[in-house]
Structures are given as C-alpha cells and as structure tokens.
Length: 162
Image 1 (cartoon, one colour):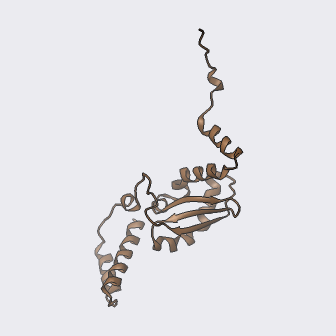
Image 2: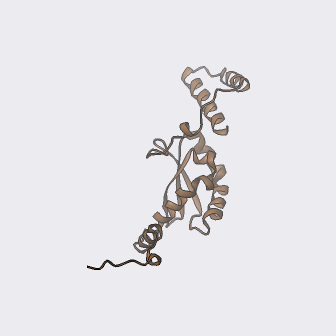
Image 3: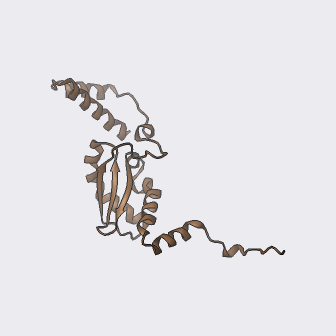
C-alpha cells in the first residue's frame, strides 16, 4: 500500500480554521473574546490586567463585560473606560465593542489556572509616611471593624500602585 504524502502548503494552522468554523456557526463573539483575553495585558496594562478579566461580549449591545477583583478597583475602572476602549481599537483594530461594563468578581478574576492579583502584586510593607497616614486617617473611626476595613483598603490601593 502506498502512503500518500501530504502537501505541506495545504496544511493550515488550527486557530484560523477554528475561528472560521465558530464564525460560520454564529459564535464569532467567542473568537473576539479570545483575542481580547489574549491581548488584555497590552490593552489594559499590567497593573489593571492584574485586577481585571474580560469575561463576555454582548454583540447585540456591543458591550464587553469585565470582572474586577474588588470594590475599590470597580469604582476606579469607570475612569479608565475611554482609555481602555481606545487601546482595544488600537491593539485589535476595528472591533464591535463600544462600551465596557465592569462588575465585581464573586471570586478571583483568574480563578481558572492563573495567578490572583495578590500573587501578581507582591505585598510590601507600608512606608513610614503611609503608616502615619493610615493612623491619622483612621483615628476618628470608632468602629474597630470599619477602621480595619479602611486600613486594608488603603494598603491594597498602595499595593496596586506599586
């Protein structure tokens, strides 16, 4: 029996074939989401990519849904929306996303196999100035649980900026 030799030029990479098959079945948004996830550190920058994760795309409303690791970052992300959209277009070209919707993650945004934001951002002790700022800033809070929560939030904010 004679073995057929395949033409190397006829072989195709799997990714483009899979992308074409998904698009033909009306699942092109999954291809786009995969591209967004792949390029997210470039689009968002390493600091924001450590605390955010693109999760889904609603092609009807042209919204990219992004989970955020904690409430403080969730509030801050609204200030980054325009820049992220601009970076998205610059990195991926013309994509059908016109708005970002941020929502709080119920757990770590990298729950399946990746590093958590706490692992990405190595904890460092606060500087003397930061420690004094926390002490003075929380001195007027009488509830010990609330005082501790504010102290932790301050420290996470400094960690994320480092």
